[in-house]
Length: 503
Ligand code: ADP
Image 1 (tube, rainbow, N blue to C red):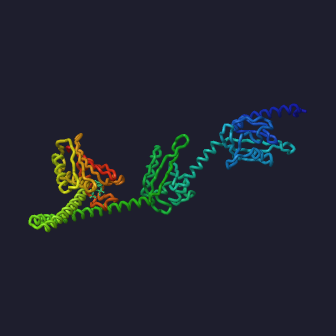
Image 2: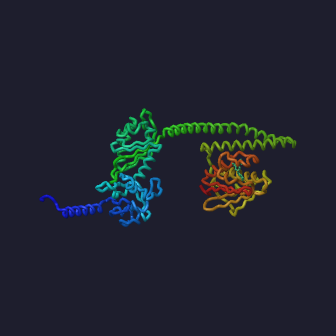
């Protein structure tokens, strides 16, 4: 009959279309495999082989059944038995699976994420004959989305407002931090212009920022003002960076705003306190100067009169009393001079009177004077130089020598000598004063030249005010010299100072 095909012809057509179908299946960019009703693999394509990383034997009952992967994993990362796999379930319960994601492992140890779509296959009588599984490698997408999820979580949990916008300033994303700082929820602000957040006085900023972004530049920690939903002004530190697409074109910007309202308030408060402190400090310095001057005048008169009295007296007891009084008046006078010096240093009024003289001579005379009043220690000067010519302030250097040498004696009560060495090298004269006394604890070494500093552990045993070394240090500094100390507890200290031989 015309138009009807013979059985042979029909079989041929069927064979040809099956071949075409198989050919197509082999070339498909997704993995495809079939099993019989017992899960034995009867067919798979090249892509399936590539994803599994192995080539299971076909129609082999000893092969892994239900799936060609070496190993399968449950969602919690534990190994899934092949007979628990979606393919096994599809055969067991005659059901389909759609877009089921799971992790598999290849023989080379590489783990791969796949998405599977499974259908059981039935014959014309509705009997189950097997199943077909079409699956895809989604590792890259999965990893990408994991990174994206992690980043999104960071953005969401940030205390800062993280906002993205287009180059025309339209808000495209809005995190929880932005909601907290500016008061708007994402759905009420996304799609609106960012200018909503900018006070009228700062509107021009946005144009400048966008100009920079278009040039690929970043705006870093720019301190400015923004306004929240209720019109409240907020101090923010703003960082804006360009956002680029895959081709590297700038398509928008990310705004990170940190609320610094509290910091600005605290800074302002600190500045006010600082000003107040400076003012109080000035009052204190002024008072110190005034008080020292006022004390100095009557003290000078007392000293002069005591001097006259010393000459007039001829009985030993009275002379002894006057001498003792004179010694105390001298101490008081020294203290007042030190206090006056402090205020001079503080106000930058410590002026030096430079002359040229022989420092060796000054050293020798000063030591002789100290030696007279301090017979307990032998003060030895060691130098190979006949003279040490310097241009310096002789009175101030004498003051430094007295301070350091009297300290050396005071802080070495169990010793009987102090050694002074004087050297001159490379236009610098160096004087060292070595004692064999109580020494200075390591932690205090850096502080001994600070104003009013005294070593706590020993301060109650020795009289002092913590002024001498501070002034000495400032005097040497003014000479463009250096002053430092080496010391070891219970062994002794060596104080050094250098001054340039010529100014
Ligand atoms: P003070 O009047 O207290 O001696 P200084 O400014 O001269 O003041 O010295 C500061 C502190 O440094 C002293 O109180 C003392 O603790 C320590 N000090 C100074 N010189 C010596 C020294 N030669 N040996 C041990 N400690 C010293």
